Length: 281
Image (cartoon, rainbow, N blue to C red):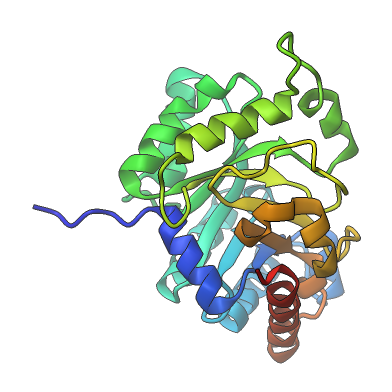
């Protein structure tokens, strides 16, 4: 008889409590590589990625690699991503793969198997997904996440201005699309302790969200800190009573301090401390 798999929500709660509530994005885009003095090539990608991994893997709770920035280098870029995911997880970091996959039927199942199947080279602790073919289209990913102890982060209220066109559209029942996604996630997480494994992506730059019920008993991945303008002090006003389950993401705010490993660590520690103090409840 195999031991039960500890769900992502439980592992995430413990990681944030122990290491601090911070997610660092790993976004090796061309401009950032250049700012580090690196070429926009596979050598630059490797140097950038593993500098971040070696500097932060044993101290930051959550990492969010943006798959697209690795995919653009083809199979060699994917190989770097595979190694990074394995190294981060070995060091105790949790990996949220930012791939924003969304499709129907067997195609959605294949996306889920790529990132959520235990023996996949890209197996991650959680995956970002797009529900805009209907929340039900995510069922293969939901089912596999439950089986493998992984999690999902569903795009609900994103920080890009274009997102409101869809997410704040109002259904016939008077509820917005974004609110509908949050309600689905609350159902998935019902009864889970200390926190469910099915989270929402909710931008930290959106201001007052009191008209939305963010208490989904699951994590809220919150991009927008740092370069996009949000600060740790903004989090309680944006997320209200759900602030303890927020996973604030910082990318450029930390990464701009590379390639110096000590500077990367210092920036991450500073953000983690500021966030912990801001969200203390």
